[in-house]
Image 1 (cartoon, rainbow, N blue to C red):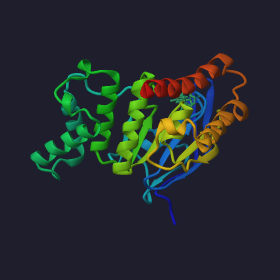
Image 2: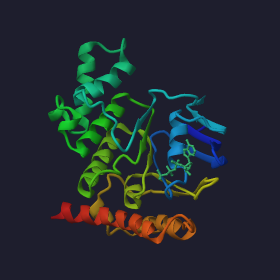
Image 3: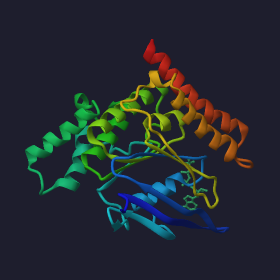
Length: 289
Ligand SMILES: Nc1ncnc2c1ncn2[C@@H]1O[C@H](COP(=O)(O)OP(=O)(O)OP(=O)(O)O)[C@@H](O)[C@H]1O
């Protein structure tokens, strides 16, 4: 049986002034419908390149991506992307930002009233309906990111692609966003590919964690299956043996098996590890207080 989404034999070679640079080599990955997959790996290993290929923004040098038996050749509304920096249009209200995407996908298929209800529904889903008429400049970073997610969800994509969606947020906002995303996921059961640098985030949210080797010629190193029961609760999981085992597996992969020798300094490694621990510890502290 063919997979819902399959990345098959993907190489990515970039031309550079110093000659060609093989960022990805023979990347293979099968994703089932409704699966939440995280991509994790050291900075510069090629996570965004993989995501951009799935989004259709980059064309693989060889191999390719098959979504529901059709080859991905260009961007399409069935693959919505959420970037780290929301990318909302500043002169439009949050409602209008979502409306723009909805019109693109549903013009001629929905009446004006249906569209209005659909936009409001998606803003409600991310708890942003109270700020429908505000512009991006008038709301916080976390709120902007919520609107970005609402905009992506409103397109009813087959696949939601997220490139470090919560990377720019503070620990508490990030924890709330993760909880919201899990709640939305339990309702919509989207297929999601998310890039993250945060080990706790990967374990908390994912069904599958795809750990990438360092570049050049980066590829899928190991895949960790996360079978923790849902709904997941970060407080309960902090004490859970399986959660902590999975967390250690990812850390072991990153800091033992794929330890960066040259360009990745100890300072960066501890910053990265500290960040994920800090995120969960701070979040647990705040939520439990
Ligand atoms: N357009 C491009 N031209 C040349 N090299 C590129 C291009 N895009 C990416 N690269 C290189 O390919 C490699 C992978 O980049 P990519 O952005 O996919 O990594 P990443 O894992 O997402 O990094 P980070 O975690 O820091 O965002 C890097 O060495 C990068 O410099």
